[in-house]
Length: 337
Image 1 (cartoon, rainbow, N blue to C red):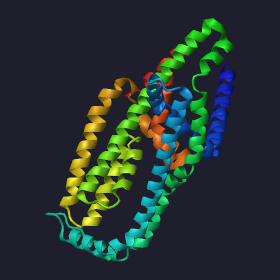
Image 2: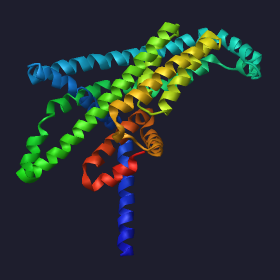
Image 3: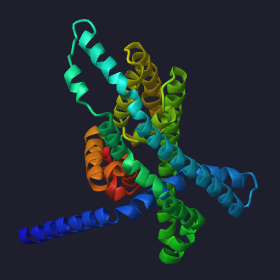
Image 4: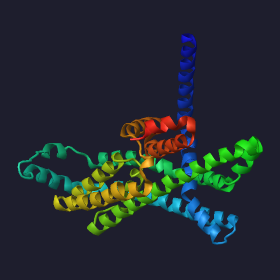
């Protein structure tokens, strides 16, 4: 008995290792494919709406795919052009380093920091290189949007044919139960992805509008970052907040303008993420904070920044699948908060 358990454990370790290697090597294809699957769920309500308006399904598919192609293209162009413009404009902020040093040396009340010597040695071009390398994964991901779109075309075109294949494969008895489980999974996954994307879109638009009203440069870029990073709970919003507030402090060279940007954006972000989203989403899709952290570290190590953005949606989808399969429901309970 002990020997059988040891063999099974060894086989499980080998299988996990092989799966990890495959996921690592297949990253250039798997990330666009997973994005395409997620996008197919997100655009499904639009397809349903058009078909209910008596638009033929092939025409509805063409309309939605055309709109999605234009949207993906615009997002890619906006992100790439804004990132390049940010790096190109950074040398103009060289004078701000001296203002920042004097402000920190003067201090706010008892808090005084003398960084004049350190800031004098700081090379603004190196900062630009670091920022460019930081947005590199985003740019490379957006550069594969054509592959994402091609996957999306095949996924959307083939949706709705699974029921007939299941019926043909399993017969009338088991097919109805399997179709019921798959339909429940599809409905819950669609609900989660649509709501999460809508909230993230609202967060990005909010950041863009607020920063534009305050006169912050590259407001659209920070809005896009807020949209993407909102898929990472807590940590993503914190990173987006530090980036926009830090840049505002660097641009304006005073305390009050970044302070009010912080207050307004964090307040609206709290309303969206902590009040509105849980009420719409429901408590059933909550994830354990420890699981979220582990998922973030694992997918970030495996696929980099795109993996960190996809980590929580992937984990939520896994929980939804486990909730709808009786044998895996204990796993879904363990994944909850």
